Image (cartoon, rainbow, N blue to C red; front, side, top):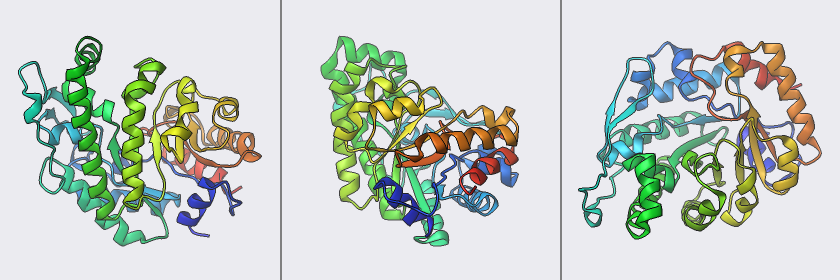
Length: 335
């Protein structure tokens, strides 16, 4: 059974040869290959090489065509600051009070910002692994793109005070996500994970999520699946217990759960949807391999009877994580 078959079977709650393990290795691949993170997040060639090197080193079930959370906003006109060995940050937002919202242009993934480099990485990764290993692309969720376009505080105030104007930004953000996601599928990814941190109950009330973000996610996932995505993967970190019950209605096939969400929460709130998680990311930097192996084994056991579990971290494995700790998680799935 190869990785694609293993993950697809797990999504369907079928019996597989073992629990799939998808380590959320993004910037850690740069560390593993000795490439400065500031270079890795701007080069499709470096990204693909790092992901293949990490796959060969750890032997898990997926690789990622993913730079950071600022790709979409940069392509739309935001200005970023780059560091030598860190992720980028936004120094000027693309949308402010003087922006004509009716004139906003959806970025072209073939031309704008770092989008073409991500597509280059996707094509290379698919060529390297074929249909043996899952190639995962990435788009931000609509409300997260909206907050990245204008800043979290301004976006949420706009949503509360001038909802009709926020709707324009939100719809624009949705079209950015869809256009970029479709381009990644065409480039060869098997699916695109939708990162939506601004949709977390830690950021917005669950009622607000249901009213404004849920319909956008339903639309986005229906279009991505219609274009050939093998599964709909929603990644919202933090205390998602209040919104888990919405996932089936959204069309989620794989739902990420962070370390602050227990297996018991999953059993109660999301019994029939495949989940990935949920080892605490910081533990990969600070804990011992034995501790990681024990935590992963306990997690596998807690969800074994339920099924539908992909072993993973709760969020990104930090770039400077100990390689032996990542390896310990992978080994736990093969016990």
